[in-house]
Every structure is written in structure tokens, then in C-alpha cells.
Length: 184
Image 1: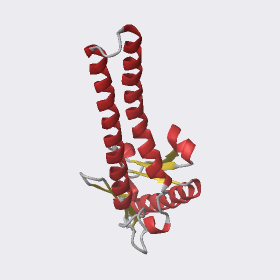
Image 2: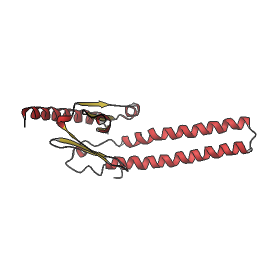
Image 3: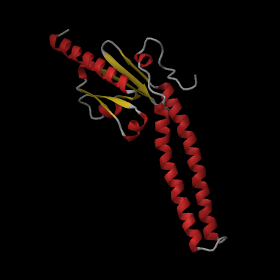
Image 4: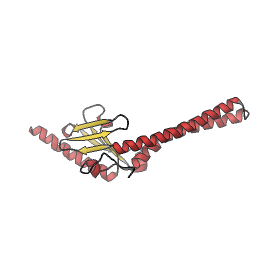
């Protein structure tokens, strides 16, 4: 199948709890709305010029050209956004090991995050506006580091998967802290 997480092989956590395919649609639409606003702005500006300047004048033709290039730019950026998000989705990987969680993500520049369970201080689930529309959730892992909550997260899972991941991560984190305190 075209839209599947190719990095998630059998036996890994992300194969058991895969990301939702709706995540790709959400990300593409979120980026495309910006491009649509750009086109609408230039379109409205060109239409406004038409009322103030005689049709066929160089000023109106120049603005119509800018609108055309804005529309072409929006189409190109939307196509790029689709390709980027599909590749990002296909390469997204996470796995809960015995002593750490590993998250690999990225399209052009790849990032791998490894967090020991005993270093995790907070686990929370959240949704932004588009997540609510698409029924998606993000599971965030916070450590004492400044960027951990933003970087160390599993994004684009369903409600049931988010709850299960959070519960499993909480349990592994508690067990790791107990083992650390016991000197194991």
C-alpha cells in the first residue's frame, strides 16, 4: 500500500500502534491553507485594481501576473507538501524498548530521539485545532531538557491508541524510577 509506515516492521510498537493516515491529510491541509490565503490576497488585490484602473492597463496586467504566479506557487507548494508529508509519514518510527523509547522522524533532515524511561518527568496527550477536526492526538514526553516536549512526541494517533500509549509509557516510567531508586 502507498500510504503506510515502511519503517514499522512487525514486532515494533509503531506496527502495533500505527499512526493514523488522516495525519497526512491534516498536515497537507494545514499548510495549504496558508497558500490559499496568499492566492486569495493577491486575487482580491487584482480584483480591486480592476475597479480603479481601466482593464488592459499595464498596472492591472502586472497585478494579474502576480496573482497568476501566486496561484502557480500555491499549487507547487501544495504538491511539495503532499510529497513531504507522505515521506514523513512513511519514515516515522517509534518503538518502546525495555529501557528506553526510540523515535525517528523527518523527511530531509532526520532526527532520532532516545529517552530513558527513568528520565521522563511528564507524559501528556494533546490536540490542536486541526487534530480535533481530524480526531487525532499527540502523545508528548517531557524530560528536564528544554525541547523534549516539542521534539519527543508521537503525533497523529487515534484516541484509543493515545490512551494505550500513555498508559504503557506511564507504567514503564514508574518501573524505571523504582528500579533506579533500588539501584538495579
